[in-house]
Structures are given as C-alpha cells and as structure tokens.
Length: 293
Ligand code: SF4
Ligand code: SF4
Image 1 (cartoon, rainbow, N blue to C red):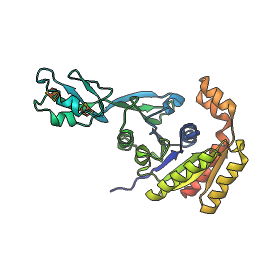
Image 2: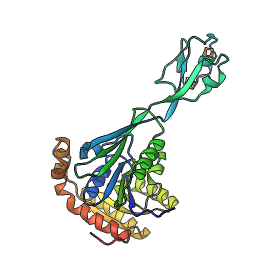
Image 3: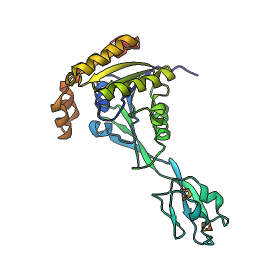
Image 4: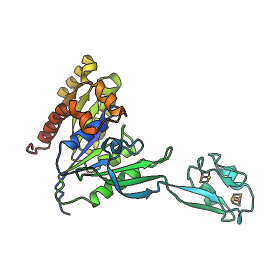
C-alpha cells in the first residue's frame, strides 16, 4: 500500500457549541492544498459558513424499514402483536415509528412484509471559491447510523484526493460516540477544543481516553479562555501534568458570534480570531514535525 502524503487532522469537542466548526473553518483557511470533511453529520454547518457550490450529491441509506403488502397480507395480526415499537396498526406500518428491526419481516407467515433500504440522509461533494473541496452530509432528523454516514463521506473524500493535497481537515462530531470513532479513523493528529468549565474538563478527559485507545496524537485548544481563569488554569495544569501540548488559547469574542448570525462574509468575520488560530496552526505543525509555511 502506498503511503499517503497528506496529514489528516480531526477537530473534536466534548459537546456542540464549543467553537469546533469555527476552528475547523479558520484553520483550513490558513492551510494550502487541503480538503475539508465535515463529519458532524447530525448538525452540519461548515457549508453554511463557507458557502460552497455543490458538485455532486449522493443518497445515504442508514437503515431499513418495513412496509406491508396489503395484497398478500392475510390480516392475521401477528406482526402488530410482535412489534415492540408500536409501529404497526390496521395492517400498515408507520415509517416514523419503525425502527427497522426486521422482526415482522421474519415472522410474517404470508411473506407480506417488504423490508428494504430507505434513504436516511444525503452527502455532498462541493467546492469553495478557492477551489478547495468540502465534503459534508445531512442526516434526516431522528435517523441513526451516523457513524456509517461519516465513514461514507470520508471514503468519498479519500477516493477523490489529488496528488498535491497536503491536508485533510476533519470537523468531527461532538462527544465520544460511534460517529466520533468513524471520524478519527486514520487521523494523524487531533485538536481537542474545549471551554473553561467544569463539564469542559470532564468532556476533555473522556476524549483523551478515546484518543489514547486509538493511539492518535493530540493537543488542546481552550476557547473563550478569558471567561473563567480558574478553569483555564485547571485545564493548562492538567495538560502540563499529562504532558499534553496546549496548542493555543482563543479569547471570547462576542462580536464574532453576532457577525456570524448576521451573515457577514466568512473572511470578514474571522479577522479577529485569525491570529490565535495561526498560532494554533504553528503548534500543530510542530507536533506533527512539519516545517512551518
Ligand atoms: S404478519 Fe403478515 S400476514 Fe399477518 S398481519 Fe402482518 S403482514 Fe399481514
Ligand atoms: S421492522 Fe421492527 S420496528 Fe419496524 S414495523 Fe417491523 S417489527 Fe416494527
């Protein structure tokens, strides 16, 4: 197998709303020859900030659902009595309630249950104004199997990668669940972004346990470090004790959030936080032993 040239960096956080997507967007804008993959498939929003043109879209099927073929149904009622999700009534399946367990399909004595793949989301290949490819996905509300969808978009991004690509920046899902496992697969480095709160440090430690299991190198970014000096101190002390690099501290910036909400262009919005994130880029390259550019 040929060694890949590019480095894959995944950005993680314990919960949503910690600045993960902003960091992914700004860091990407500071790197040359990159592709960006938004793996936060339950709440994708990088494409909203970066406003790409969609080149291709793909259907994603993350589950199967049952349907009753009324012509073959003998109305014995067995499926309704077996379905523990109460998804069957009057010899018809409510697709919103069907969990796709397949029990009715297997049990029906008349082969009257159709059990097939259904579309539960879409994923996209898109291009930013500077030619960078952005891959992202949207899972339909309430649908599961987001880990499988993350794997699909990463696979698509890797398949289409060009020889001159040096970076794959992955905006990971929040938390430590299955989609996070899928997003960190093959990563060279993880940036964990956290906020200085008691729950922030707790979430941080859970992600670190996961990354240690996968043997992935990582560093920490503290966002809004200036809103709670005590907790920022606790995070930096913990990092020092555990020999984990602090990649950077980002100050609280209320104007930034307001600008984003008002739809001001991305490049103007990020002007105030570009500098600390440039420092994070430099530290990340040090950790990866890459000369700065
Ligand atoms: S088990 Fe089959 S035959 Fe019986 S009610 Fe359900 S679909 Fe109809
Ligand atoms: S597949 Fe499972 S959840 Fe769906 S209707 Fe059949 S028994 Fe109920």
